[in-house]
Length: 134
Image (cartoon, rainbow, N blue to C red; front, side, top):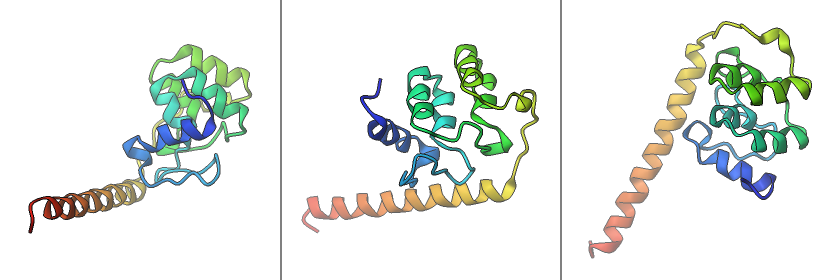
């Protein structure tokens, strides 16, 4: 459980799909258009969803494949979470929507991940040089 919104968003940033998202606002998204509520719906974390919704996150943000957080909660079988989103005003017209693959968003996301991997490789290489006397 997260003590506050800042801690929750830090937790979301640790998920690979959100690497590089700074969360200058609660509604910042990753390359797919997913916001933090999409992420906690994948996790099935009802308490985190309540914190985000209570803090004003866009409950109907369309993200990867055109899915909203409600679609994600349903896709992963989190009925209680889906019911909470519905009771909080989530648009139910999206139920049953078909996932729409977007190759451009996928390429952008993969480029972001590859960039992060390259940064980590450089840091590891630099750190190793500093420890072996080279």
